[in-house]
Amino acid sequence: MNAPRYRCSLCGNLTRFDVVTTATIKAFHHYSIGGDLEIEDPQTLSSVVDEVACRWCGHGRAVEIVELSDAEDSLPAEQ
Image (cartoon, rainbow, N blue to C red):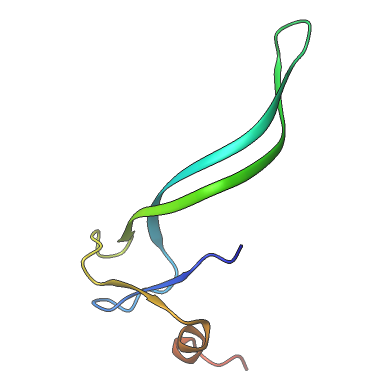
């Protein structure tokens, strides 16, 4: 699963975002005789992004999802 790429159109941030996600996960819970829990084989059944906020500006009013090619065009060229 590829995570989306975000951009803040107010400040230009491409790298720092607070993302709140709700997920439904199926996993095998294995308890030892001593009561210690080991979670095995987690599978994400569904995942929804609830909120995205720019870490630099502190709000999400101008955060947009960008296509990978658009994000690559905004990054400085490697030398």
